[in-house]
Image 1 (tube, one colour):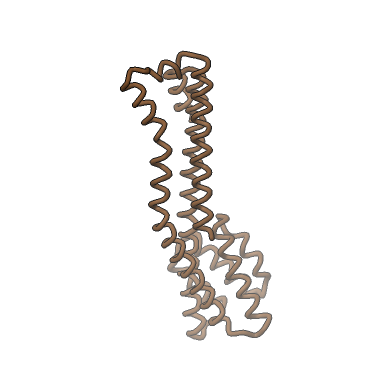
Image 2: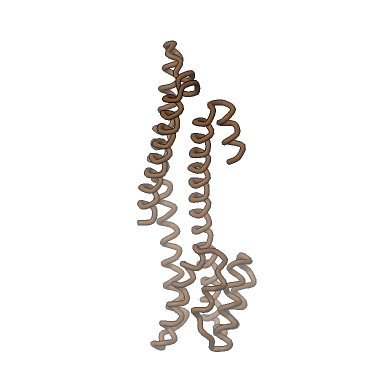
Length: 220
């Protein structure tokens, strides 16, 4: 962000620096949101894979702790740590809710709570643990599949929102082409500096709002 602010100051003065800071903050927020979305999907996939292995071990007649330890051998390291925590809790007849604390990310913790609740439900009511966990695994896989489908379908609307966000640049280019020189106004006058900051601020709000709408569709 510092480099963007310095560049904005050199190109368009104080207004340019403020506008560059707003753009950099918005871009960083959007990138972080996309990274969190990918991380959430990866957490669901990893836990579903681990639960599948756990269910296979249970149905083969293994003790829950042993089945969880075996499941931890062939999964992602972060998920493996969670499965080992489940194994330790099952072997010591401990509190499964403490397993959630082993999750390194919020996305994994949210998904892991579903497994823990299913485990507790099976033990509380004497239900077959393998069947209950397998139902949770199917639900996790279905949720991940649905989320990917929605993300694929939202590519068009997101592209349209991105195209709309660059329209102000098109307007500036048109102004330059007809000799209006809007850049000189934006960078060389107090009113232009204020309009530059206001315009970029409204642009960032629009980007954030459109991202919120599309994210609500994905989450729903």
